[in-house]
Structures are given as structure tokens and as C-alpha cells.
Length: 166
Image (cartoon, rainbow, N blue to C red; front, side):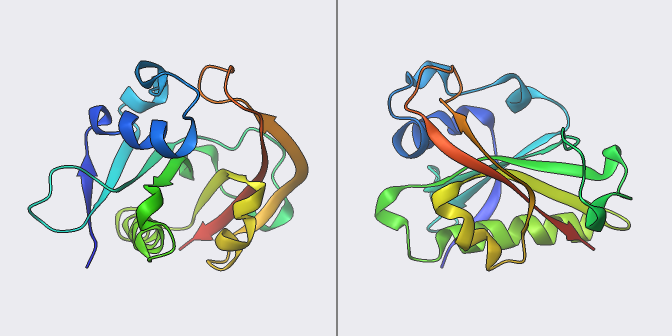
């Protein structure tokens, strides 16, 4: 059984480095939003006694930076949240760890926010179908490239997805 709990930013770099951006140095894995008051980090653990997460997800209050499609156009910027750097260690991928972590995040938003909020993210194109299973929709059809937190990693294609959480 997977347990999810809040974690400190200092616990993120090893997972991000191993899963998302192995070509980017470990000490360059954190970004300014990781230390913001509007950011929460969640970790997935195999048990309540484990101290090292096997997965992580960063949630920050952050307005969507492009034009919003009609289905979310009326959600104000202060009610918009972005997921960053969602990763599960490779040996635990495909075993439901990411599902538990993602659902936990959705439930946290439902329980702590009054009214609808927009949850959006830049998804790796190869992961689009996984997110669509949870009801996320394309916010912008444009495919774009990211090269890691420093801009020097391997190029990866992304697409913007979102969901209204009530």
C-alpha cells in the first residue's frame, strides 16, 4: 500500500534526477517555485516508516500562462494550480504509485479549496493518455519542447492539459 504525505523540497532532487532529467546535475534539479509559499510537495512512500519517497509531485498556485479554452475561462488566476515535476522511480512505475499520488493531489484540492479550481500541467506527450484517463483535457494543442530545469537537458515534447476540480 502506498502512503502519500507532504515532503520537503530537499527530498525531490534524487527522484527528479533519476526519472525526469538524468542529464541535469543533481544540484540543479530545484527551481525557484520549489521554495515558494504557494508550493506544496507530495511524496509517495511504500510504508509509513519509510523516509525516502519513491515518487514525488509538486503543486503550486500558478496561473495558466496562455489563453484559456471556454471550459475553464471563468476560473480566476488565484484559483489555478499547476503540477510540476511528477515522477515515480522506474522500478515502481506501472504499479499504481503514480495513480495514488495523482488522486491524492486531486482530493487535496477538493478538500482545501472552496469552489472550482483549474489544475493544469505540462505533460510529456508520451504520458498524455495516462492523464486523459483522469479526465484531463487538452488546454492548447501546441506541442512544445523543454530541455530540463536548466535548459541543457535532452529535448522532450510536451502538451498542456488541465481539469476543473470541484
